[in-house]
Image 1 (cartoon, one colour):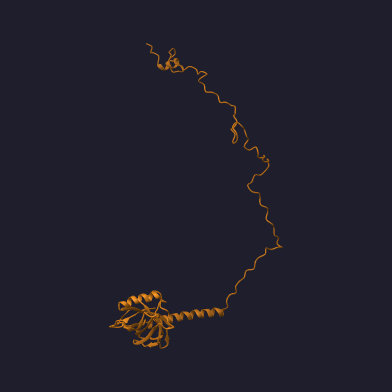
Image 2 (cartoon, rainbow, N blue to C red):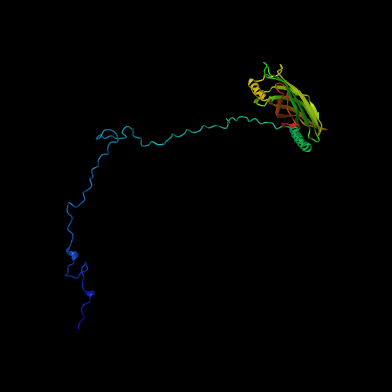
Length: 302
């Protein structure tokens, strides 16, 4: 009995179906495109650019005023620099002479070195001597202070102050020589240094080590050599005088030199300030004194 033909032996069409049969794909073909559905063709006609400046509708070439550049012209930003001038070997370039300072001779170098060594040795010796001797500042104290003939009612202010002080030398190896001592009397309310009432010089004095000496002087106001007392200072002293007590300040400028065997220091200036000297007057008289149960120490400024 013959076998039925296999599926692979049957011929097929290009669409993959059996001959004699039609598929839905073959029957439902899309209609051809119409003329209305086709896209419009691009216009090949070129339109001119709108004018850059000017009135609308007027065509203007933006570069019509510039001349045409030649074909063989080299367009560079800057022109080529001219060649440098040539200097031949027969004309050398002129050179400015340079001044050379001559080297110092050995003689001057030796003098300079010797001076430097001498200064260094002096500084070292002075420092060592100062550390060994150790100079100390002298001590000043007021032992008594009084006023006489104190008169504020006359046309010219007049008064006399008597100040006694002690000077102590605290050094153990140096003697003190007080060559000049200048004293000034001020009212306690005075402000400037020129507002002093009287001025005088104490006698020079020398004080040995660990000892003290007494100095004293009388200062007078109202003389020809004395300055005129400011009016506002006189008014302040009148107010204090009505209370029975007037305060004064004693200021001194002192020049002292410390010496010992084989060594002497340079002269040194000191400022001594003795304040709060309240003089109590006896009734309506012009005499008064400071009650000091013990010496009043003064401040010393170097």
